[in-house]
Image 1 (cartoon, rainbow, N blue to C red):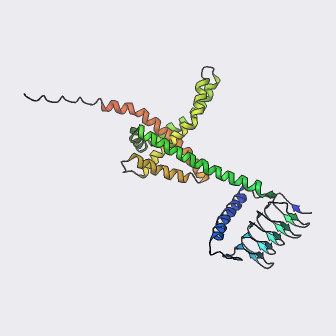
Image 2 (cartoon, rainbow, N blue to C red):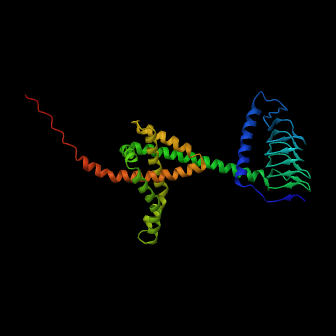
Image 3 (cartoon, rainbow, N blue to C red):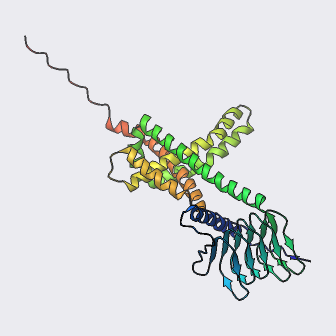
Amino acid sequence: MANRRQTRTGAPLRKRSFLLITGSAILLSALAASPASAQDEDLSGGNDQVVLTGRLVVTADETVDTAVILDGPALVEGTVREALVVFNGDTEIVGTVQEDVVVFNGTVVVRSGAEIGGDLVTRGTPQVEEGATIRGERDSVVTRFDFEISGFAGRIAWWVGYSISVLILGLLLLAFAPQLFAAVRETARERLGSSIGWGVGLFFLLPIGSILLLVTVVGIPLGIFVLLALAFIYTLGYVVATVAAGSMIMRSSPSRYVVFLVGWVVLRVLALIPFVGGWLWFIGSVWGLGLLAVAIRNRPRTEALEGPAPPVPPAPIPAV
């Protein structure tokens, strides 16, 4: 009876296999569509074995890193250090595959004495002989990669949507509140510490205050409105921080739109990095809220120091 020990390596192995399979699919599809592609073409490079059409064979005395075939059967008698990926073809494993085996279409036979160090992912039900070892799990291509692809596509769709929302909100702010650009630039240069302090307070006190309002009867509507508006408020802070980041990069640019677009491009590209993007959003929202609060707080004081504008003298009356 097949030995199936649950020793999965977790999300990193899944992500690595997903990236490997996605990249292999793009590469092989492009090569297969090329007029230069010939039948039985082996594109093995280094210690990898990549076959477009024909037959993939890893002999008993052979060791390769990765084995991928687009169309045709695969036979593994030796050792595959990483993953084995078969897009369309029957697969027979006699030797060892140290990571995942993924077969999108075709029958799969795992012979007695064969060993798979990762998961066995197939479209149909694989034939696993007694004495074969599968250290990971048996999974379906549909459930595994539908989830992975939808999750990846969802993250990209959210990134695109949020990037466009930030762009539109920033352009609207600069168009209808042009004085905001100068105020944010001055505050970012001269009041960095106070803006961070105000930002931290607003970021955390707003949800706490709204929850406290829900405890009181008369404050329930206001508490609900603040909670519903938190996403917009945090995004507004992120937009203001985008303007400040652009002004720090383009110190001498007089155009508020150019400054904002430079900051927007830099922050949204960095947002593609999962861990870094999340922290940058948090820091940007906190700093932006603080910049906005300090700029608004200091505006009346600046206007009072400047005083009212001097009256315009009347034009002289020409002599008749």
